[in-house]
Image 1 (cartoon, rainbow, N blue to C red):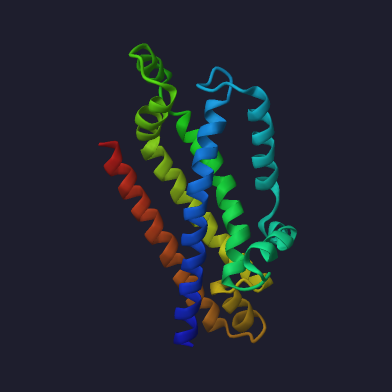
Image 2 (cartoon, rainbow, N blue to C red; image 1 turned 90 degrees about the vertical axis):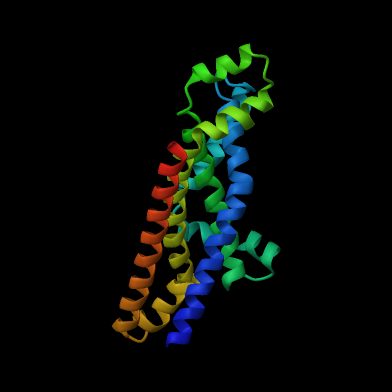
Length: 212
C-alpha cells in the first residue's frame, strides 16, 4: 500500500505541476490582456474584453467533474486517451488557465493607477509598463492568488480520480469507496492536508518576502 500511495502522490504532483505551468504560460498573458483591454486600459478594446471575459466566466462556472466529461474529445485529441494522469492534465490545465486569468486580472487591478500614469508621462511604452510596472507591483497579490489556485487544483485533481484520472483521488475511490478500506482514505486525506498546508505556508511566506 505504501508503494501505491507514493505512486498516487507522484501522479497528483505531476498533474498539479503540469497544469500550473500551462496555466501560468497561457492564463497570465490572458490576465494581462483582460486588464489592458478593459475601459481606459493600455490596449482598450471593449469587444475583445467582453468576449474573453465571457469565455473565462463560462468555463469557470462549469463544475469541474462536468468539465472533465465535456472536454473528453479534446483530451483524446491531445493525449490520445481519456483516462490516466496525462489525460487528466488537459481539463486540469484548462481550469488552471481560467482561474489564473481571473486571479491575475484582479491582482493587476490592485496596482495604483498613479503609477501607470507616472510611467506614461515619463515616456514608457505600454509593453514596458506591463513588464516593469504592472507585473512587479502586483506580484505579492498574484502569489497569494496563485496559492489559492494551486490549492483548488489539488481538489480538482482528486475529483479527476472519479473518471480514471489517476492520483490520490483514484486511489481513494478504488480502495476507500469500493473496498471500504477507511484507513487508506485517512492516509490520503493526511497527504492532501499536508500538501495544502505546505503550499499555503510557502505562498504566504513568499508573498510577505515580496512585499518588503
